Amino acid sequence: MMKESKKQIIECLHSIYNEDKKKLRTEAILFGEKEDDLGWHSTASLGLSIEELNTLETSVSSYQGEMPLDYKNFLKQTNGAYLFDLIHIAGLERNYKNLSYHEETHEPRYLNELVRIISLEKKGPTRLKDYYFFGESFINGTVFAFDKEEKVIEFKEGSLRKIREFN
Image (cartoon, rainbow, N blue to C red; front, side):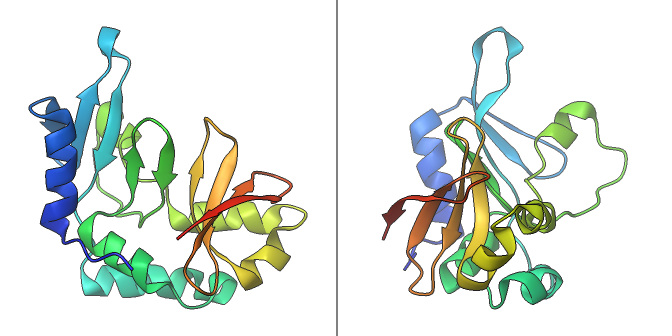
């Protein structure tokens, strides 16, 4: 189980990227600017309140069931994240108004959207009964889910063939 606090996760990203960061009006923090204005390596957002967390869980519970505790704890720390230019961890759409293109591109991947896409895939509805999907890697063409024991499972996108698992 994840035992880190919000401060520890953000501090970890701060220690990796040092002063190479930028804070947006949405409270998102961008870390590790790429050369030639090609974006950022990692993004963390303002964590969810209990009310927001309940709203998110309710909106996907008919597809995914109960939200895993580790994922809930993560979302309290950061509303989704983009980590190390590799993985998008989904969160809640907050519907900010008048965002710039830059701010909009650094909003988290929305869990509702991720689950909807997986539910439309050939094997998605079956997998949604047994796994709680929460993230994806466009680079690797994979999606991530918790199993019933809260291990993280990586699946090949589309076929949802299990690739590996993590404790």
